[in-house]
Length: 367
Length: 202
Image (cartoon, rainbow over all chains, first blue to last red; front, side):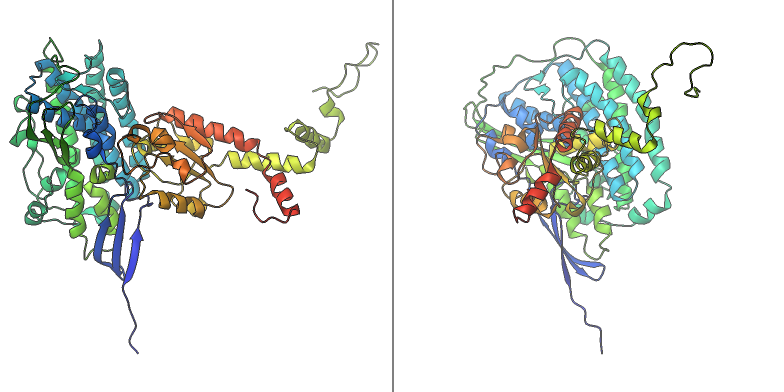
């Protein structure tokens, strides 16, 4: 008598410690093998795009912190401010642009540290979580001295930044970078040669160059598949064209490659911050912008490189005090789609490794 | 060590002995029990001991919704380390007795929060962390998708304000909850409920 088998439908989430938020994956299993994955999103939909139509341009900066990807508040603010500045023709002073670069890169490091720590927990390396948050806390102290907040800053303004950095902050920031660089090697020591980690990530969740382009993957996910594309290089904004940094690229497209790309990105961020601190010009840090600003009628689309990929901001103005329409092109949304498409054929345990390697934030997916 | 005998030949009256040495070891236990709040009756003493144990091992559900979950993670991590007050996250509601609703709760998520709370064994507690979970916070106005306060679906014991609250604020909230648990007459309540013929206590 032949063994009777049937497909198993498994609901993963919305409450699951490894979905990094409230994502629900409807997985169809044939034994251990995945035959289909359907992501069910929207559990954190916060209607932030609609809310922005009801608030003034200046007020919306605070919404980008919370309504969008909450781990990279400053990068969201930068994308929004750049869009409105392009719409209204505001020129940001030099010092403001340098400060924005410094804070965006600091936030990139903080975001990658959270990703590494939580992915470590998913793969069974609890030590990593404690190590990454140890470094992150020191970084949040730096944020707190300038912006007053640990997670949500509302530091960037249309036309520059809210306030100048306090005396001695640049030195404290250099000290942190000195302290932080050796810790990247520490993570390498813990993971890169670790046989358990390699078994779970190397060769797992491969997304080819062609698929990555076709499905709109961006950021570290695309760069791990051999696509040397970084918005900071391709369409430089702020002062990125004056700062020297490399774009790390890996060819293999697996989870391990995505891990290597992100670790190298942290090193490049340190390099950028050091140069920006050295070149930081004196002078004004914010342009004079009226509180009730009314950009002329028109529309603009601005691309930035957020820690998760290409973050686009599309703003339409009808000449009023608040935007007519705001559309956010969220990097996590496309990356999640790309990787759930290639999950078919892998084992059920690999879902955790693949999902963690995308570095999704559900607030970014759902908005 | 004093032998407890007055020194011979001095004629000075012996100092009054501490009560502990006059009583046996069993009496020492009684003395400790007497010092417990509401001591004397064996029922309340057991209750205090149980409450002390319950308050010192609050196991929250690993359940993050939004930004506040990052601060909750920070509270569990290196600098703040919630383990030292006995708070250890559990990944399943069946083993948890505390739910920290960290972040904004959408209308789509609300039935799931309710179901998770129903899956937790009693006695169970809920901390509403942050403005969004408490009242909708920055998502109160002009919003069609966020629940205006998680207390519409689950009963909340402690509200922690902030957007997001700092890890210190969350720790303060947990300490407040511990104080409350230590004073809770939950055995008496269950006994009364049993006498009344009711099944549940809460």
